[in-house]
Image: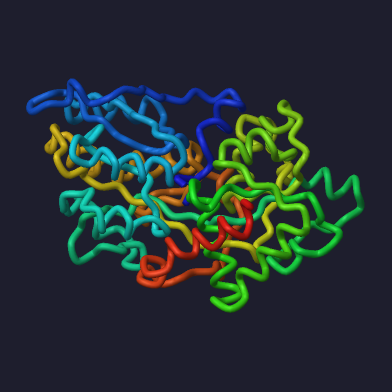
Length: 360
């Protein structure tokens, strides 16, 4: 969502609904100086309309090659490990939960993108140096399967507190906070809610209440969640999943006429605000192509394509939102947040403590 909004709901949901997705993969062997290929390294949930990327090629002469590298957390770690020989020119999908790790490891070359003046200041986490450019935002929240709760005559949860109640035992699947950006964002939401003194006790109760943990968003949403189109095919049996406030529109995409209500809902009291960024990789072979691609990612054409491709909110405030996105996505007015400097200072020890509590 990515990983926002990564994410953003992933390309796998869109594919399950029969919507075409462009996903060209490969390294950056042919993205050398003067090359007409620019390589975008991203998480598995990156998606864009083929027509939109063709428009970038027509406007600039550069063809986009997309190299997907797993969940956002895995993709960032891989980019750090390969930073002396970067796999591409631009990295998209590092979010505010992982940003300090990327910046501290010197992944990016500063570049001030065109159109940055149309991005709200609260999204510009690196405004002084422009090492990264904000592309989208979203809220990581628990989603629920409406049919399950209706069939069981049970009200869906609305808050973190609800998730540890006996009536929701064995119903929730979340992602690993050590390998997944939605999983980490959900952990940070509980830290924002319960504080340094209380979050670990909360997770002990959540684990005791039958929490299931999987590696990443795609497995949680597409395999384990009973409310997703893919989950129904995979016979997922978890009616609660950590995903995005903007996930529900994915479940009505292509449905005609549009229903009054989608099959999934959002527990609005469980949300954490996520911002995704793109950056020009240090050592990129195609610097000019990378700069042009970042400008394009922030441009109105790509920004208006994004909501129904990756199910995230555009960073460019001039971008219009489609009806399906605004009607079926949940609008979160008071998401949990943590100061970036607090995340940077404590993230590694928080994740280590979480792993000891939840995975053992």
